[in-house]
Image (cartoon, rainbow, N blue to C red; front, side, top):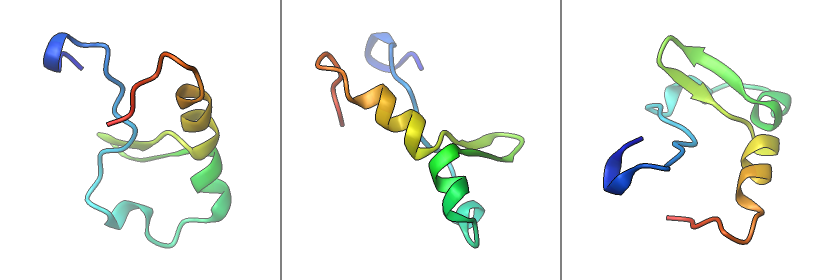
Length: 57
């Protein structure tokens, strides 16, 4: 992403219906939901946000 100088990672972009009726494993490991929607997964998001220099908004 390029907003405010870039360096951003979008964790999820969906309207909410895409994750309906998904398994726990899908939430943990991630899933490609449609052509333009992807859920990265809790494992990957945890890994990306546990470093000291990470800012959360």
